Amino acid sequence: MLPCDICGEMVTSESDMKTHLLIVHMENEVICPFCKLSGVNYDEMCFHIETAHFEQNALESNFERVNTIQYGTSDNKDSTLQSTMEACASSRQKCPAQIPEDGTLKHEVFYSETFTGSRKFLKSRENQSDLSETKKSTYEAMYGPPECPFCGKIEECSQDMENHVKTKHVSLLDPPLEDCSQPLYDCPMCGLICTNYHILQEHVDLHLEERHFQQGMDRIQCSADLELAHQLQQEEDRKQSEESRQEMEEFKQLQQQYGLDGSGGYKEQQLRNMEIEVNRGRMHPTEFHRRKADLMESLAVGIDDGKTKTSGIIEALHRYYQSTATDVRRVWLSAVVDHFHSSLGDKSWGCGYRNFQMLLSSLLQNEAYDDCLKGMSVPCIPKIQSMIEDAWKEGFDPQGASQLNNRLQGTKTWIGACEVFTLLTSLRVKCRIIDFHKATGPSGTHPRLFEWILNYYSSEQGGNAKVLCTSKPPIYLQHQGHSRTIVGIEERKNRTLCLLIFDPGCPSREMQKLLKQDFEASSLKQLRKFAGNLKHKQYQIVAIEGTLSPEEKVARRQASQVFTAEKIP
Image 1 (cartoon, rainbow, N blue to C red):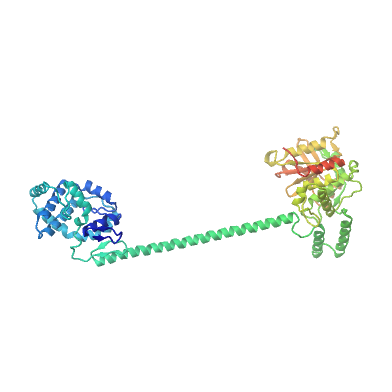
Image 2: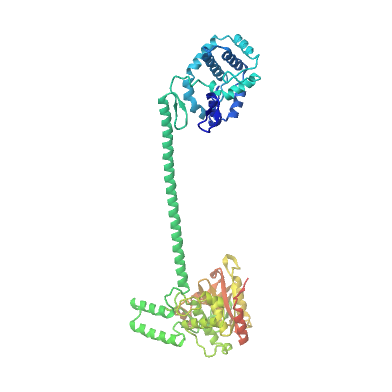
């Protein structure tokens, strides 16, 4: 018994070992003994042999040589076996099969050298053989039960014997490697058997070149992948750095916008800007010290020093529309109101405070509000900040207070419609917030806003007068980044509407041009705002409607716990 070195299976003979190695361990290496087809498994090879090489003449010739081996002498046994192989070679020549390209390349060297002599001998024997005698001896051999010439096994019919020989002794039908006088060389890379050392060396060199080429390609691919990964990582790092920088800049802008950058409030900015004016030669040091003293006095008493106020504009507008404005059909003006503009202390953030000063200046001149505003004067900006903080302490608008950290004094924090509403309500002034949260006209315009303001001012009956000075207070107008005060509305002869607006960003020298006896119509350009001039996405207004009783004030305070605004549309 012989053990298999690969799997340990025991077989009876060396020929069975070859059969075992061929069938069990040489996967995809089964080779047709007739046409050298390879690359298929054992069952597929059997099917191929039975279908492609099952020809009567080849079978008869094969069994004639088998019979000769069985009953012949030992002297001619080797030659008869050689004849059997020649018959197999003859069958291969008769049935040329389509050979896979890889199988042909793999075994071409081996078979081209091994079968050269066999093919020459086969041709000479075929020329000398008598076909009639071959057929006769073959049929005689088939009269009795066939016996395997290699292992002595007896089969019932020739077909079974043929299958037995093809499956159990297929290696004996291949060229007699054992009898080959030349040494054989196994390829250490793929196991290919070569009969020439130089051929084996060239074959192995091809393996090495292929491996070196593949390694080089792998290194190139690896290098390219590493470079791509490095570029992607750099791009990702650059994006993250840019996003972080942008977020930091936006955060600083928000801090500066809402006065939370820790740079101080109204007083600090006023003094800092006056020092800059002195350094630039725009202000004399004596003027600096005088203004500083006035500032300290104003802050101490909490009353605005009036240096940014312009009075008498409503009266001037009434005179102009009565005598000059020929393109205006009708105009409605608010009650008397003073204009306040931003100063060095609140530049770029104090518009909300200045608009509140305009509203309060109108209410202080209206007797209907004497009861709730008795003894008050127009406060300075730090005082307004203190008043809003007091309203928060009373319980008004806790959500808004929380968003601004419950602190306004000493900061440059912006205020908007909610803070103005909270402060007026805490003073028992009845008001409402209307939110025009989206455009209601073409090209992003807000015609509903203009209609609402017209209804607000025209609700007082004034007959058919061209100019109507109403008792209505001005309206606080808020949009993203800025706020202004509406003091009237025009109806043009073409039926279009135009708002009259006080802007705290307009300096006193421009507003004082309207106080001249015969000012030009171009001076009104800074006040007039048509529908095409107001195209912000959202507008909020605070409209004053009277006074509140103490009970109503308490109810408004409770309602402000969840702050809501009336939306149009």
